[in-house]
Picture 1 (spheres, helix red, strand yellow):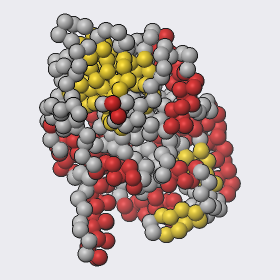
Picture 2 (cartoon, protein in one colour; picture 1 turned 180 degrees about the horizontal axis):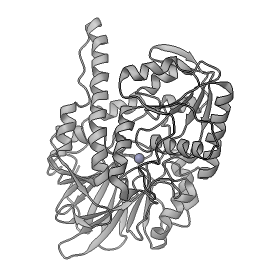
Picture 3 (tube, protein in one colour; picture 1 turned 30 degrees about the horizontal axis):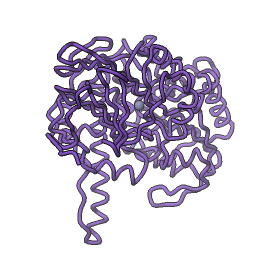
Picture 4 (cartoon, protein in one colour; picture 1 turned 180 degrees about the vertical axis):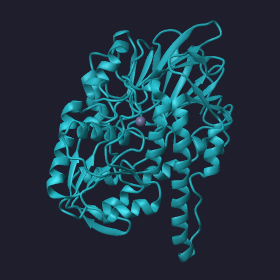
Amino acid sequence: MRRRKGPRGFRPLERDELARLTFHGAAGEVTGSSFLLETAGSRVLFECGMFQGGRREEARNRRPFPFDPAALDAVALTHAHIDHSGLVPKLVRDGCGARVHATEATCDLLRIMLPDSASIHEQDAARENRRRERRGARLVEPLYTAEDAERALGRVEAYPFDERFALTNDVDVRFRRAGHILGAASLEVWVRDEGGFERKLVLSGDVGRADEALLKDPEPPEEADLLLLESTYGGREHRSAEESVEELAEVFRDADRSGGNVIVPAFAVGRAQDVLHTLAELEDAGRIPVRPVYFDSPMAIHVTELYPRHAGCFKEPIRSALEPRDLHFCRTPEESMAINAKRGVTILSASGMCDAGRVVHHLKHNLWRAGTHVVIAGFQAAGTRGRALVGGARKLRILGEEVLVRAKVHTIGGFSAHAGQSELVAWARPMLANGARLALVHGEPDQRDALERRLHGAAPAPILVPESGDAVTLRRRGDPVVFAPAAAV
Ligand SMILES: [Zn+2]
C-alpha cells in the first residue's frame, strides 16, 4: 500500500508525470460531470455537476466529495447546466475557497440556476420532513440551501470567450464556443512545468449542433494531447433542423384539429427559448395556426430576459425573435394553475425531463386526455419520467396518483442541444488528425460505445472509455497520455 500524502483524494505526481486527471463523474454516464486535475503546482476541478436521473443518483450527490474541496486552487465550468455546475454550492459549503471560472453568460445563468436548484432541494427536504415527522423518523437536511448557493455565487468569476488566461500558476485556460446553450464553452487547458514544457488538454463540454437557429456555431479547438469528448448522442443522428421544424408544425396542426393541449416539457435554458423561437417563426410563415402559448416557468422567463444582454452569443439580433403572437408569461403559481382549465393551448414548462417543476402538474392534468400531445424535445436520462414517456409507458405515477397516458408522445430530436454522431465526429476530427488521444465521457454505455466504434481508426491510439475513479496521466516523455484504471490508482 502506498502511503497517502497530503489532502484526501490527491496524490503526488511521479517523476515523468506532468499532470494527472481523475474522472469523478460523467464517466460511463451522462450526468455528474467532474474531472480533477493535479499538477506539480496546483489542483483544479473542471465541472462540478450533479448526478441526475433517479434515487440512486440523488444519493450519490449526498456522498462526500472523493477529494478535499478545501485543497482546490481553482474551479472551471464549461456551462451552467446543473449536471455540470449543480454541486458548486455543496463544494463551497464543504470548504472550497477557490474561484469558480466560467464565461460571462454562464455566470449570469448560474445566478438564476443555482438559487433555483437550492430552492428545489429545500422544498424536497421540507416535504420529506413533513412525512418523517408524522412517523417520528429522523429529519433530513437539504442537499444545499439558498445561502450555500449565494456563497457559491460570490466565488464566480466571468471571462470572455477566446482569451487565454492563467487559471493557476501552471495551468492556463481558454473558453471556446460550444453552441449547446447560452454561454456554453469547450475548454482548452494548458499545463506547464517549471521548464516551460507544455501539454494540452481539451474538454469538449457539451457540444451543440452545427445548425442551431439562435446560437453561434461551435468552434472546435485545433489540437490537443488529450481530448475528453462528450458522447450523449454518440450513437444517434438527429434529423435536420428543418425536418424537426416540420414535425413540430405537424403536431400543432394535428392538435388544432383535435382541440387538445400541446405540452412541451422544455429545459428552462435553451430548449424553451428555441421552441418559442420556432413557434414564432412558424406562426409568421403561416405554417401553424396562432394559438395561446403559456410560457410557464419562472426560470425560463428569467433566462429569456437574459438573452438580449448577450447579443454576441447569437447569429442574429435576438430581441424580437422569441415571441409567438399570443404569448403569456406565467410567473405566479396562480397563473400556472389557471392553465388547468384551458383547452386548445400550448404549454411550455420545465423541467425538461418531467421530474420536477410545474410541468409535472400539467402532465397530471393532461396525459390522460386522448387529444393531448406531448412534445419531447431534449435528452431524457435513464430513470426519469420523460424517459418513461419516450419509452411508451401506458401509465405514470405522478404526485401520488396513477395517471393513464392517452396523450400522443412525440420525440423530436432536431431540437436537441447536443450534436449527433456525425457532428461529434466532425467536431473532433481536426484534433484527432493532429494526434490527440481520445477519452469518451458524458454518455451512457451504448451511446459511448457506438461513438467508439465509429471513431475507431480515426483516433491515433486505443480510445479510452473511463469509469468513475479512473485516471489518466499526461507525461513529459514517452507516451504522452497513460491510462490508470481505478484499481491501479
Ligand atoms: Zn449541457
